[in-house]
Amino acid sequence: MATLKSEIEVICPCCHSTLVVDTNLRRVVSHHEAERADKPQLNEAARILAAEAARREAVFEQSVEAEKGRDDALTRRFEEALRKAKEEPVTRPLRDMDLD
Image 1 (cartoon, rainbow, N blue to C red):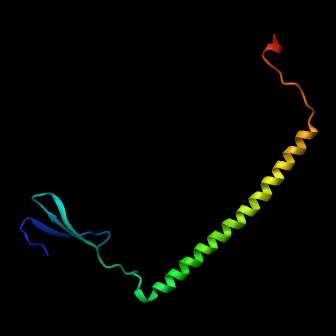
Image 2: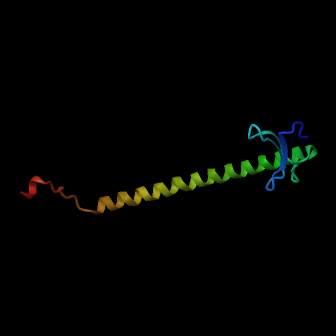
C-alpha cells in the first residue's frame, strides 16, 4: 500500500486499523479502519430499527409515568407545608432596629 519510500504502513494494536505515515512530513497520510466483527447486516436493519423504536417508546412511557408521580408528590408536599404554616403562630419578625 505504501507507494513512496518515505511512507511506512503501521497497524494499530488497539483498533487494528492501518495507518500510512510519511516520515518526511511526520504525519499520518491515510487511515483505513479494519472491518468490525459486530457490523450489522443490511437484512437485519428493519429488526434493529424496530427494536430501537420500541426502546424509545418504553423510555418515553417511563418518563410520562415519572412526571405523573412527580405531580402528586409536589401536591402532597405543598399541602403539608400549607398545613404546617396554618398551625404555626404568626409572629412579628425581629428587625435590627428592634434590638437597640
